[in-house]
Length: 221
Image 1 (cartoon, rainbow, N blue to C red):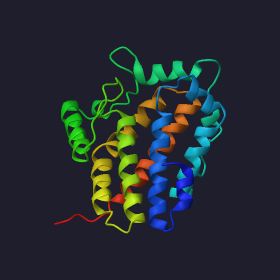
Image 2 (cartoon, rainbow, N blue to C red):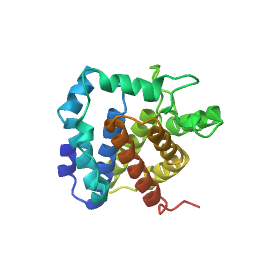
Image 3 (cartoon, rainbow, N blue to C red):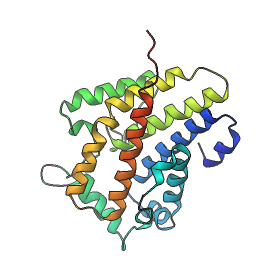
């Protein structure tokens, strides 16, 4: 879903769902390993601008008091890639801030199996790429992008968004809302460069807001 799609949606509910979908996919893109193309997008400020616009459309408080300049700062040469590796990929006994949710609360196999059941229920399967593990942050964010995208489509067509909203409620509470705050705690202890500190701070606030809002989605009995 592209940013211009927002302008084509008439009702506030579908526009809000579309903005949330854009926020999820923007975060997913910014948590990918920063290759040369991604780094160029960061230095140009395009990724930060896209994320800020989406978050502002979701809730203006999500962009207040943020260090948005930090999300333009890729450092020198390959600083961003080196820092990504240090924080998220390597380390004695594992990286200091892993991006796999199952590593934060034990029973990782059970966590991954549950995530796969969510994905399969909606006809989604994972690729064979190394980062496409079911509990990886980008996988979870891309799934939530899919759910919110379908919610916006359904609302725009006058349908019942309930199934998409209930799936979001259950998945957010059982997966990213459960472990992203712990990721932030570990990240702060690792003294990251400003880009990753700000990115994780924005994500933590967004996920907390999602979990709180989705609690009001009714359950079918």
